Amino acid sequence: MANKAAQFIYRCIVNLHPPAFRDKFGREMLLDFQEGAAGLGCTRFFTDALISLGRQWLHTPASAGFEPRSDASPLLNGHYAMIRNPPLTPLEWCRGLVASVTLLVLCGYWLGAGSRIPRDTGIVYAARKVAQAAQSRPTASPDESSATPATVRRDFKQFDVASVRESKAGTTHVSFPFGADDTYLPTHGFMQMIGLPLGAYIQFAYKMTPAQVVALQSKFPDWALSTRYDIEARVEGEPTKDDMRTMLRALLADRFKLQLHAVTATDKVYDLVLARPGKTGPALQEHPGSDPDCKLDNARDSAHDSSAPCGTILQSVSGAGLMRMTGRNVSITQFVLASLTKVDRPLRDKTGLTGKYDFTFDFAPPRIGGGPDINASEPQPGMTFKDAMQDRLGLKLVPDKGPVTTYILDRVEKPTEN
Amino acid sequence: MSPDSADHLPLSPATLHILLALAAAELHGYAIMLEVARQSGGHYKIGPGTLYDALKKLLNDGLVDEVDAPEEGRARRKYRLTDLGNSVLSAEVSRLDGVLRQARRALRLNERRS
Image (cartoon, rainbow over all chains, first blue to last red; front, top):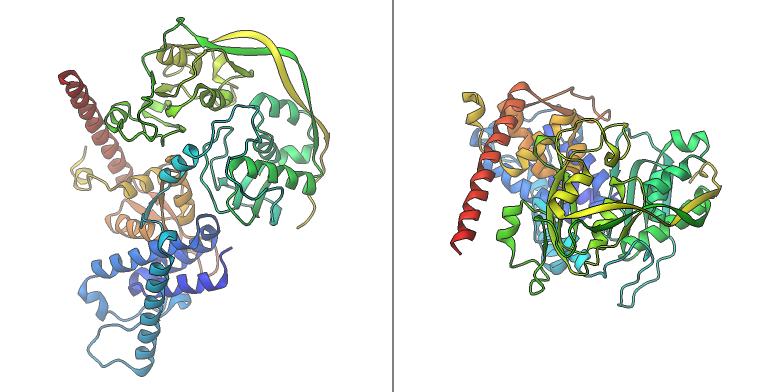
């Protein structure tokens, strides 16, 4: 929830919009601000609203200024001076003065804050931040869940404040990429996860594979399977994704009394190997070592339809109902992490590939209720993930046996009230 | 492509993403913002000002309409895609498909030359 001062400023900016726009969308903008400002930061909303303010007045027909005010929205009714033939009343002069001073204060804040104001306005691109975050951190293997950056920083153990509630939203929302890989959007210490089941929180917190969380969920009580939760939490500072995992583990232990322990035994795994020794597939290209920031390969990326920020893997929907996985300047370890949700066993990297790679390939989405697509036997549009990986990347999965970690549920309780 | 649909092309990135978001479900403004971010893998986010400016134009053009007009303090105002909006979205996707094909061809030729 945005604080009252920020809400007041945002309300002022909304009130300055043309009456037709304000009456139609002002209430929605305020509600959006209340819901989203905590996650994305007030500055972006202010910037967006100021751009909108200029745009709406520029695009407002001159006649609109002479239209009678609408009384449909008492929330936002008449808080600015309008251009019209009769002279302005003293009250309207005062309102205009307040509006002008507010704008001046905002401009001063803008100039004073300087580097804290995002350069993107109106339409905000977060890709740069994702890329920077990914580039600034070392590549983690599946077992390096507690990797720490080289710089000295705060040790994040638990959130400063946290709220756990049963979800009434009916929708799902996460404030940063929730996958097992290191793709992350820094949120200034804010975590907002809406409408997720307990298993999803545990999977993220413990960096579990889908198979591990499915095995764990088989021991869940009924309420843990049927109930979805909203978790909102904040900590001062800028924690990494692994810090978020650490703090979420502490929160789950505190509110859900969650206790787990890991057992390692020999079981079925897949080894990821090169289909043809010494050769990768046509869609798996080594990233030029001279271009660590991906500045020189924009043309090639266009040819590959790549939109993944440098150093990350992006999964999206391509044409014809297929899924697309795109990686740019990523290690095979990152690819293994991103692929864990596509296979039904743990994956081990046995390719021997140590460099950074670019790739893009399409594959058929997993069938609803059909489990991992790797075992799909019915005809589907496009190749399965396994087949596409072998055909396009030259990587194949070889069944094997190896050490597999399974999590055992010791204790879980319904969360305590906040 | 119908003449009506062609009149609206090409779509701006924000408009395209909003129509794509509404193609799946009736959504209120904040849900559209989240859906746009989700569809783009977090790469592309729009703020309320951009969103409602685009929605205003889409409502005026009949590409989108409101599901209901809530009373003050009640549920959020939801939006949905109209038949015209659906056909404009299809036409835009076809147009972009053609652009991509041309772009790939041009880049391949360029690589061969160099």
